[in-house]
Image (cartoon, rainbow, N blue to C red; front, top):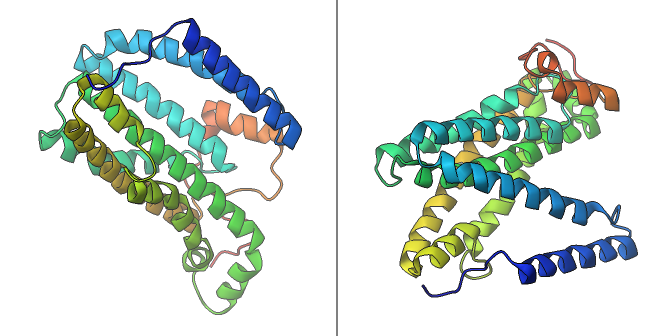
Length: 280
């Protein structure tokens, strides 16, 4: 191999703890938030990765167990995106947008034979695409819903000019989709020049082949671009059609019920209308 792989041991643990503590000090000195934010996130990540590593070691040996793992990942991604979007009604539609994004790329990857139909190949690639799509959808939904509140007057003005509800909302929230897609676009444009993404580094460490690492990374990047584009486009369309809405002053209790109450999260698939608009 070209590089020695980092191994779990005292030096790695001490280094991670030191970096987490340093970040906590910066949080405190700069007033970025509670100092415990980074240490807590670090501890949580360590526990989660230890559990996931133990599960995946057994799960990826069989295709059916790999599919089960991916189903759990998708559920968590859907709930996380719904929570981050701060939608108060229709947030379950976000799961549909995520699913649509994945369905844009998975059949092509598997049917082409580029990605073998084995757990050890499918799980890592799908996890990367799902994670990136989740972030893009959550950001797009949140920015779009914020925009509808801040620019409600422009929506009303468009309605007064004869535009439909859907077109009026879409006119003001279209920029949210562009902003949500920018991070991955920038990563793709600068890959190899500014950053070496995780898939590249992982394959490089495990195989020692830079060519193989590059092939895997370009596959992941392009798949992520397609998945994010599809999912974000659907999310913006659903918001424009009033399927995903947000009350102007949602209560914290309502937010918790929306995410953790099964009946309220997975119901009301599109029965709401946006605040500040009138039906036509």
